[in-house]
Length: 297
Length: 331
Image 1 (cartoon, helix red, strand yellow):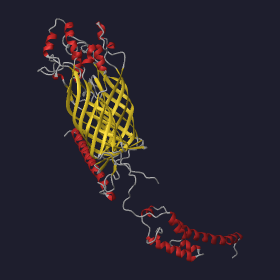
Image 2: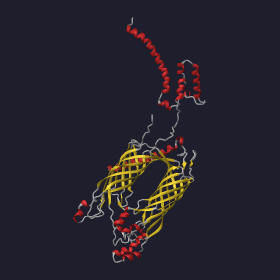
Image 3: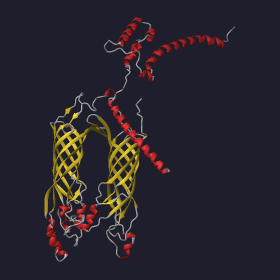
Image 4: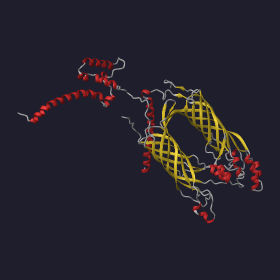
């Protein structure tokens, strides 16, 4: 056995032992919590139960992340009911108050080039903003699971009750995309004599839009900071992955693979993760939370 | 035998002095010992229960100490003018007073602190942090990296350290880059990273606890990190790949970020971090010189530098060395 191999095996063994020790220590640390005079007692007594049997009415603003061509700002709300302190059922949604085009969109609009190959994808660069896809609204019935509850101290001066939650549900996204360009239309325009005529034929299709509803799973996680018994600030990350045509270009559909097929249709709906960040303020009703008793579990 | 004047003087004056010294010695021994009992800071005395007859009298009777106290008071009052007796008697007047001022400690099996000690103390410990990093905001080229950090905790909330990231061989061109080139005939100038090395300060302003189903508790903290370092990058030739080639060059980079650390054990944590590395990037020149100048390397790089934010997400674990630590208590 070579020295290098022996050295590697030794360090792997040490690492394994350390890992085992770590797990053991974790177990021991947890055991410390449940031995002694506090054995059998809950982790927290006199706990403010912020969610159980309360309605949560939340106002929020959502911003999509990692957008290629257009970012959506969606103010909205959430209504949720919590039968227990660790479970919630409700609905989340928002409407796009505005769409902010990205720097890439501006670059394409200013410098994009058109030739006989990409004339369908970009007939006129100055109209590129008219053909990009945009999110118009989102909604999602969902279930919230709150496994962690605690508090945090800021600069050892300010203490805030917090909880961490995850959620999942079915998402509905209203998107607006470039209207489909059929093979017939494409063949007709490409059959024109020169590039200028082809551009003139394809250009009206850039401004034609169609709307549809994309249905996809939605999931994410968030943190609630309780500012008062009835008010919390929420920081939430959400993903709603679905396929859509963000660029309005012909990207796929050819049976040989991801090659243009001279059409703009559902085949050009590429997969996107569509994740977003939400900042909200949640109001709880009734306004006074319950307090767990000393003997409660 | 006649003593010398000196001897007489000595013995003459010495007898009185000797008697005084003896008296003083007796007084100090007896009186002082009573005081010593009261003023003892012996550790054993502090941790062991005193004998029942020496316990302070209870507020309301029934206990043995109360009986002793009563007896003490009775004997003290009965002895009246015998000060020495009073001083030396068990539970004497002075001792009773001292007992009342200094409550006796009772032996306990376990001590329960109203405020629990911090789960982990970081002061004076080293922290090793291997991690996997991924660029969060570059849609044209992904910049994953294998990272390692080393910190030394000066205080429990402040650390100084360094981190190293290796990018080369891990980067990939994104689909967006390809589709933009194909659909719009635009080339996006991109760069390739090799490595990054940075010095940082870490500050922990937020410390928290989470309980899970009211059964177990774990500790976590949130930290701010910032510093300065270098990145080694080079442009990827996309404008004129047939002629242009580039070497890696050093770029000074500032960084700032936030992170969250969850303690698995007292020396092992898992963490997630979001950090922005800001630097002035050198991009490929979008214009191609004609003729012989096309091969002039000075025309390949854009004369203007571009401020670049490389926002990176890191996930990893940290290990503290030494593994154990000791709590220090105020004296």
